[in-house]
Image (cartoon, rainbow, N blue to C red):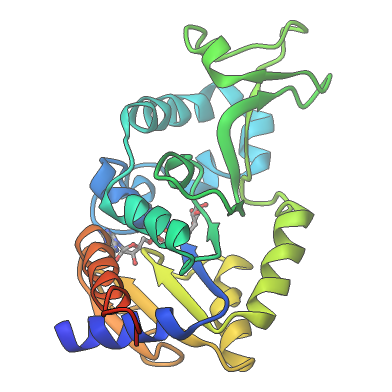
Length: 253
Ligand code: APR
């Protein structure tokens, strides 16, 4: 595995534009369950009943049962070594943009500044009926949270059936067309359009580094370097390998 980590570190170090596509797996070590692994959220809540915009509009109180559970877990979560490692790589100039499917704000808390949120962010709530918006912490003690117009508020996350924010969509494809390295971390790559980003970059010659506890449909098709294991330890090992080769004498390699 060390040889693969050093190969990945060399690719990251020589890349002029490196992006990461992250999914729920990167936040599992922060205590947030992912969706499709054993014990994941969708093994306990049927996404067709809890995660579509139609389900929210027809039964907002029911959907808030799941959102409340997720909110309490996310509220307690802190960035893990994977988020911190990507933040450090950004500070060193070796990670340029994070495209995340997560809504937990942990990349920002982990020090990443260039974060593109594909599925929105749970830190604000909006009223679908009158358009008012609130910060989530203003409504922590209301269940379900309601607007001053009395309607149930919706978190500003993208439900199935809603469009991806157009800025996130266009920016991520523009980056994918120029990226030299894409790190795909903690995602089953099963939900489009986020899951088309690695292939879009690959077609333009990018090196794909995949970090996951298990193989995905990308692993044997477009992945160039597969680091099997937990994101927290592997990203930290990668960071250490980059640092080791960056500090070599006054004439770094
Ligand atoms: N380290 C690395 N990978 C991990 C870890 C870990 N500690 N724990 C789990 N994984 C991997 C799993 O093996 C799996 O491949 O993370 C992936 C999580 O996949 P999903 O649960 O499908 O989550 P994600 O890919 O983010 O789902 C995409 O689906 O329901 C929607 O909007 C939701 O953004 C989400 C989207």
